[in-house]
Image 1 (cartoon, rainbow, N blue to C red):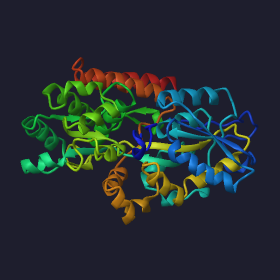
Image 2 (tube, rainbow, N blue to C red):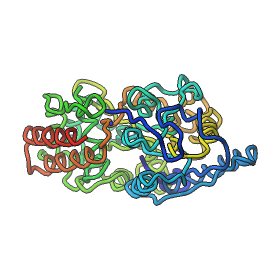
Image 3 (cartoon, rainbow, N blue to C red):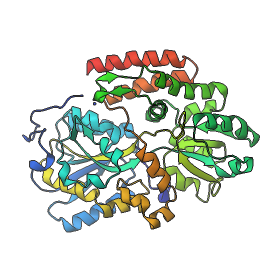
Image 4 (cartoon, one colour):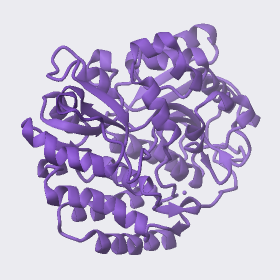
Length: 425
């Protein structure tokens, strides 16, 4: 999840079910709308989403004077956002009623009993893009509601490929060939993603594994499945790219913004990044404005599979105003607000119909490609100990890409570490 401003304003931007009673006395296992009452609320979110969100909440507050929402904005960095939310939730505080959480945190928060299960009948889930709903479930129940989605795209220099008489790649082999041969002729590096050891590296690695038809975890973190030919193939794709030079070594220090700026400054032929980069790369200060396009991520034998990004809205299990909180979430995931999420926040909405709206497609040309990518995407590995899983994946993949460990050895090591995490769970 990117805690950044809308593109138009600069930088945009898991296996047990807990039962028992929250500090408020409301049964955690009951739907959020069945207990808790009504009243004013506090919504907590990451930083720099307020360019449009405050306006949306002002509309709610005008029509719900007895249930007004106060917005609490945490720091921009996702790890700081999570840390502050976890500190509050772990203490049993009812300070926050509605939480805007990264999709990867849903399983952890649900397994800990920090967020209340929700009654799915209250929300228009059938109108959402189907894969996004999976990010909000744990243990067979809905624990949050999708609010913003995201999927990785392959950005490419259309002008360069056109001059070379080439089409954008659909497979890893095509990507490698073009990055090896065409890029150097034009003074460009071949391909980059987000390869610094942080959340982005976990995302890039998971995309490579699942594009090769592999998985890292199954059964919501209870079973480790990473020791497979598919996982070794996915990790080798990244590690061998660095070894052979078509992934530049400097990309090992890239997060979203470093990689975006390298592409925007005309230094890369190909880039894996989120949709937020589209408007920025087309801006007045971009050296590639009007010269690039986007396609779904490639895979071994055809289009690959992205990791789903974005955020979900959840209700604090200790909230005293669960009824109001559920209604607020219903409002924020309505079609009208979802349209504002896109047009005013430049964030990908979860409503399927918006991706085919002619006026929106004209304003956001990447929408049809993004829809295709989202429909083929999957959530990050679900686990009640996601943060530990995340750190293990980062460390192992970093060593493989930096040529300190072979892909085969790295997969075996990752299997060991993940099994230890699962045992502790």
